[in-house]
Amino acid sequence: MAFTFANFSSRPFNAAVAGLRSGDPQGKRLREALKRAQLLGQKEAERKGPFTRMMQTLQDLYNDSMVFRTVCGPVAARVMGLPLELMVRFYTEEEARRANKMSFDELAQEALAVTAN
Image (cartoon, rainbow, N blue to C red; front, side, top):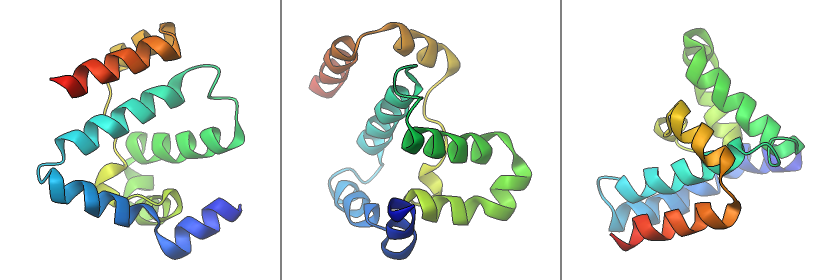
């Protein structure tokens, strides 16, 4: 609850997003980083925590319900502390299935390989 209140009132990720955008105007690296974070949240071991469940629920509602996106999207983005355009899923179902089968070390190695290119 405290995290939600802090995000809602101060938007802590806005400074980080602004900093990333200055070095990556198209947002390619930012989207890739968010995709990796979203895939980590999809792993069965991670889905059990209350914070992850809350964030996943808000993201699922935003992505799967046009009514929720229209009516509550800005509030959900504010609660998550993200700009509205970063609330979308950046991964495919196939990527989620594959990531769920991988270890955290394998996911980290894959992320490092992507950033090296």
